[in-house]
Length: 113
Image (cartoon, rainbow, N blue to C red):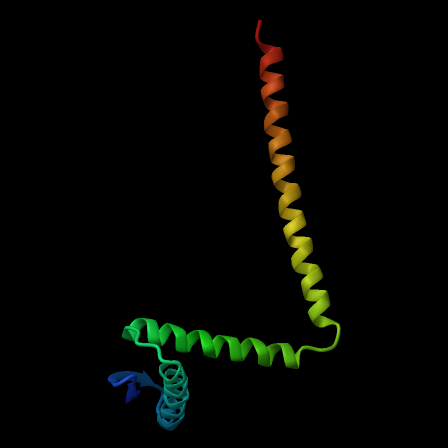
């Protein structure tokens, strides 16, 4: 198992990887550092953790945009409809649970002498 020392935001981190993947890991660290540099260029005087978090959010936003570009036409709308259906289903399940609880309460009251 290989190990690579990568420098991010001025700090060195030792990271393990499979043998032969060292150059790939270095390239990924350079990608992360580019995002860190973008965050710092915006004038952010943040802590290391906040800077890394903002860089991660930039990368996540880029991944989201790439995924949206690769999504077949109509898929985004279908996904949005499916997400809405899940929300509606959850709401209806909550309503049914509430109604069941009320019915049990009424039944318990009717059983009392």
